[in-house]
Length: 399
Image (cartoon, rainbow, N blue to C red; front, side, top):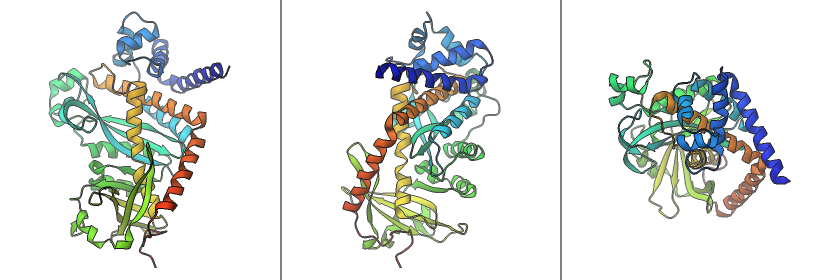
């Protein structure tokens, strides 16, 4: 009986989700197709490609799936907006964190839009791939992907024949990954997405315009930078000599597969033009097993924020990596067989929606209770493993 109830809840939830986006599909056929497509992405089938999605939908060929992704009339950006609203309604929280990151999609050939030999963090090497830049949303209720942008390399952006063959819109011009990140943040801020912080890796942390846009929005940030990043008259690595021996505090950046992810942390303020009530600084993470291995973050935070707040935000970046892994493994984020600009954005958007739906189901199934137990264990580890700090409880030097 419990299994039947769970199945009924699953089906009812999917019906409600499809009803939310149904107005974006004016005709009956694409409205029917979007439901079967989402069902296929959520189904326990080995590959979420055109043939298997078609078979799961009861079709004899993948023609209907391909038509739905490439030719039927509907706007993937409108569905993205609905996805964002759905995530906020289910997981929204004023203290949430927006997370920027990119992931690679390994491809063969040269026809898929934006494909070229380029570095893929997913593979850890240069591969023939597409790169998607994503915006994640992480709160105490859960996490999901809420926006996406396909990185179009300059060789593609400046090649009219390839652009035309892949259906790249005329208004689309070359944009760097940080520029794509700024565009997604601007959309989230304009839509009123509830959040207090932004985090991301050094690709985004090094971009002054991105940091400035966050500052203007009234949010804080904890953004990674490389050790060569200049801060004032020296590199961030040179700031290590300014950390007193008592300036390190052992804190967890969140729960990992083997328990709390413990590191030593220090924070140093630096003079800046931050608005009243805000302060900028340099957050430094030191590995316990490799005391010479450091990670650096530029920070903007309210004056009342503590070191633990910045550590929590820095640790939140893992949520988007978890989202990539789950979305690829569970709903076929990377298993598409489309080459066009339109097809890529449509598949990716619906896979993000399916992934968000699973996140909402997990929360409903008791995720909050499990998270509460994990946070209690993490807090206990903090208390047991913390070293004295000159930067507690606030960020400034101890009085």
